[in-house]
Amino acid sequence: MDLPVRPGPPGPDVLPEVREVRLTSSAELADQSLREARVRERFGVLVLAVRRADGTSEVTPSPETRLRPGDLLRVFGLPAQLAAFEAATADSADAPSARRKQRETLQGRPEIPSNGSGTTLRAPVQLWVVFAPDKGGPPKLS
Image (tube, rainbow, N blue to C red; front, side, top):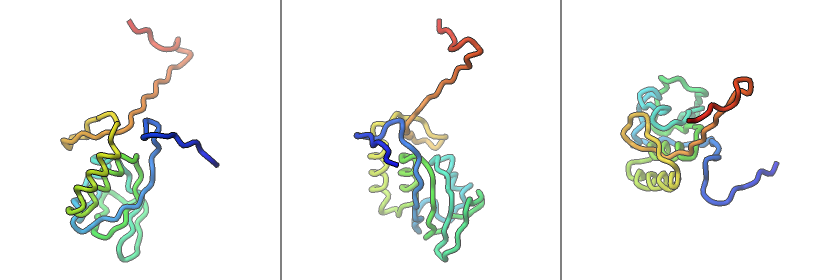
């Protein structure tokens, strides 16, 4: 199936993606559980699977799953969320380039406050309003 490609920077109709991200030894998330690292709250991504360096895999990991250096994480989220997560899994030496990539991904998006982490994220925002026809349609604004 051929889908139309919209030229230009991504807008509010950006779809979530699945990416594989390798956790490095000096990453800020190394040696923490998913709960301790607050991956979902901080980055908004969902960790779908963890493949360990020894070849074992954990699909739909629990919050107590520990992230270890060398783990290959399969994560699901919007491109901006994934860029922030990739920056947190990179080596400290690679962090500036990862943050630059994150800024480029987030450029031109509306700012929204994060969940108390003290940083501001940019993400596509889409608002849907549904009115029930049996209730008289949309409310009157005065």
